[in-house]
Length: 226
Length: 220
Image 1 (spheres, each protein chain N blue to C red):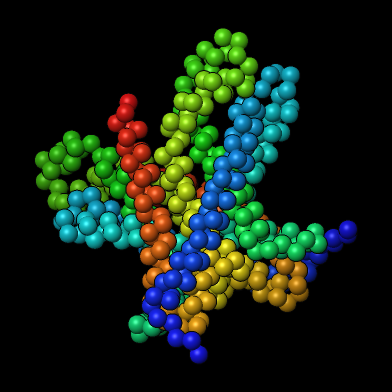
Image 2: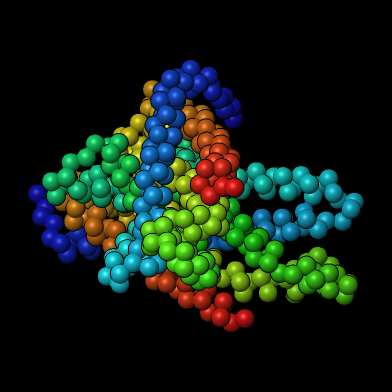
């Protein structure tokens, strides 16, 4: 029988916490990339040439469906589906791959919507001015609109990182050993649920609170800056 | 490769799914009513309560908003009994959902409350309204109207979050899906169907609340 001191509990949770951070970053970066593609698809579909209206409408409907699907269903179900769904194709997926895939898609849906709001906040005249300078869609986006949109997009994006970190806690349910799962396992070994879950909650708080504060500061700075 | 789906194997267990939906909806209704009411009270405390109370509510809101729901649930269900508070899975789920929603609702409603023009409060004061009347009749209705979309989204997030309550054996929808896949090994089908039901629920709840809010809460 191994005795767990408080330090042992804390140390093991910290070690598992690295996986929470790793999974959060994977999902955030992956979700950012997919989200950017979704955003570009969305922007293209609203500004497509008259000849491409049919494709544009289909793209727009598909994107609406994608976002409705990921924002309208529980993340837990998405994780289960990734876990059991990938297994259907005969691939034996490790829990962390399933978790990374599900969280990436989930994050991308939210980031695409957040960023779309930021792009919509750019006055229409900017697009039109860019168009009148004979810039094509890619140039309009890259040189005129995105640089301005990024400025307003940073605070809510940082704020959403908190949601991603909290979302990774659900990966414990499909057996990925991160902070929450480690907490459950240590509880089962020590029979000290109150202490262990307090520590787990505190660690999430220590991870998320600085990010929340930072997001809020960025927001205030942006509001005062204009 | 040949994958054959058997959705009927899951759908034939519809009574289980129906019970699951009933629990999910029930948990959501109860915790939204209590959670939003608490949010209204806390928003007052945080915007114009005594300094000590403001600080307490602020800490509560930050603690809840910066920790995952599943950890809050486990803390309440597994942690509190060690302190002598024993809870049934259902009660623990409701408490966790109320605690979670009330923290978010506080912040959302506070944003609306703080946007009230000073002149309206002064006008109400000059009509000899007392503080409670000012808050409930003058400040709150337009504030709720302003933040209603955000509040509806938050209620839906909490409903979707309740899927986690199955982990402590509350018999809501995801628990039903787990139970069915444990019986017939049709895991993918069971979760697809549960996910589809959640999707319909969230669309339905959004429609319902968008209709009910203006009609009953801040109408005219």
